[in-house]
Amino acid sequence: KAVDRLLNRMKANRIDLHLGHKIKGFTDSQVMTEGGDFHADMIVFIPGMTGSEWLQDIDLPKSPGGLLKADAHCRVEGQQCVYAVGDCGSFPGPDWKPKQAHMADLQAVCAARNVLAELDGKPATQTFRTELACIVDTTDSGMFVARTEGFNVMLPSTRLLHWLKRFFEWWYLRQYR
Image 1 (spheres, rainbow, N blue to C red):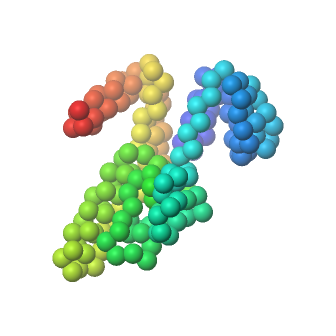
Image 2: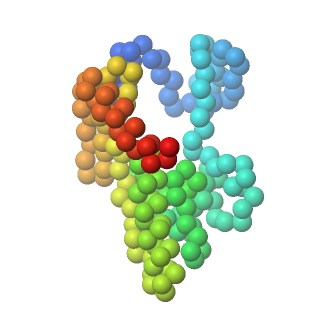
C-alpha cells in the first residue's frame, strides 16, 4: 500500500518509472535495459545491492550479490566473533528489508552486544528488528513511510514533514561533525 502511494506520488511529479528490467549499460544521455532503452537528462547509478570489490577478496561466506552472508544475530555464517553490519551484509528477513542508516544502527547495536557476549563466553542471542522508517523529502514537503513485518503506513505529504526531516538530519549528524 505504501509502495503504491509512493509510486503514484512519483508519477504525479512527472517522474518516469522503469521498473523490473536489468540495466545493460549507460551513455551520457541514455539508459539501456533488457526492457528497452530510454533517454535521461541525468543518470545517477547507485548499485546498492552488490558488495564492494575489496570484499570479494576476503575468505568469508557471501551472498549471490557479493555481500557477507550473516544470520539474524549479524554473525557472518559459520564464524565466531565475526559480524556484518549495514551495507556489507546480507541478512535474513523480508524481501522489502531496507538498506538504510537506521537499519545499520539497529544491526550495530545487535552485533556489539553479541560480540560482548561471545567475548564473555556466552552465546550470541541478540537479534535486530527489521523496520523501515523514513521521510521521503521532495525539497518542499515530505512523506513519512514506515514498515515492519506487521505494520505498513505512508502519511500524506506535508511541509511540516520536510522541516522535521531537516531537523532530524541535523540532530543525527551532529554527533559526527
